[in-house]
Length: 114
Image 1 (cartoon, rainbow, N blue to C red):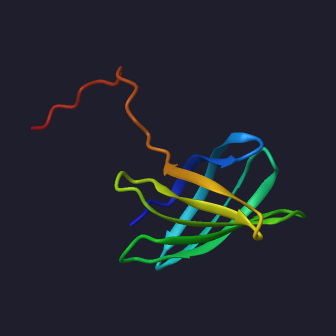
Image 2: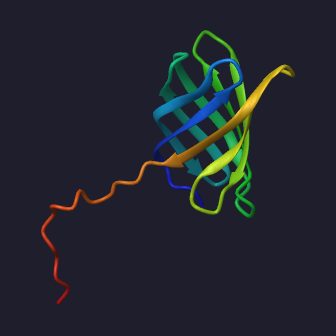
């Protein structure tokens, strides 16, 4: 359903605005999610699950030596996952993550099909 590999995106916090989620890694296998990366807060690991039928995602981002952030999201229909992050009851906001797609630069030689 979701590709394993590099992902990127952003989360929004009321006081600080939109914060980038620079490239991080997610692995999807048989309903389980694992991953790791680094952002403005620090290094983190992801663990969680996804519904193979609906694409709904529940993940926990554990900052190393710091707090946890919960992510609950759904597919947006274009390959991204959108939803809400939360820290306890008082801190929450929207997020969006998407797989990093390696697109042609435009100067690659054309491959003719025979």
